[in-house]
Image 1 (cartoon, rainbow, N blue to C red):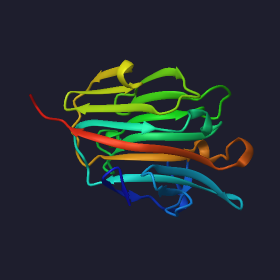
Image 2: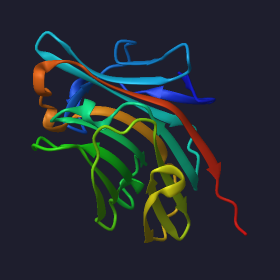
Image 3: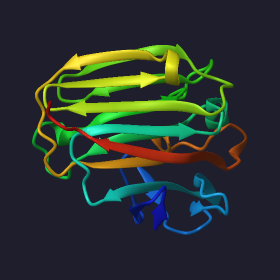
Image 4: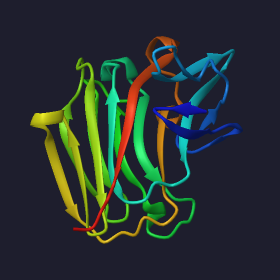
Length: 205
């Protein structure tokens, strides 16, 4: 599929796999781009089964600044929904080069929280509750010697980690899934809308 001027592979699996584990669908009911060019990622129910959505950038982008604009309030994720904006390399080296921006309640009461994680080092920052904001800007600035996460645009909250991590074959990914594979409150579909993704490649001074 095409979104925000780039090509994306849509994940599909008829057996439960991670994260979750969950079932993954490439049907338009779960993944589509609307007339305004906005990407819709949905977790939907079909009988007693739930299907989640994930898209993967093709080809890998390498080091650089990724900037997402999320249009849906985090409260839409309810209790078990998760929105993931992240990198992943199928090779297990360096913990799959996984760098995570995740929003979820993780099955607990209260407002959704935003977490930033560099999986190889186990470092994590939770800026706090994240509920009714609209048009939220998330950034991942991945350089050869550091990773910096940010949320909030011009007055962003930031977290920087010194970390030497080659880009390898890591792809940028986006997903909407269910924590523990458990249905959300109300057993209604979850939908998250991302209006655009921008990428600026890293250039050495």
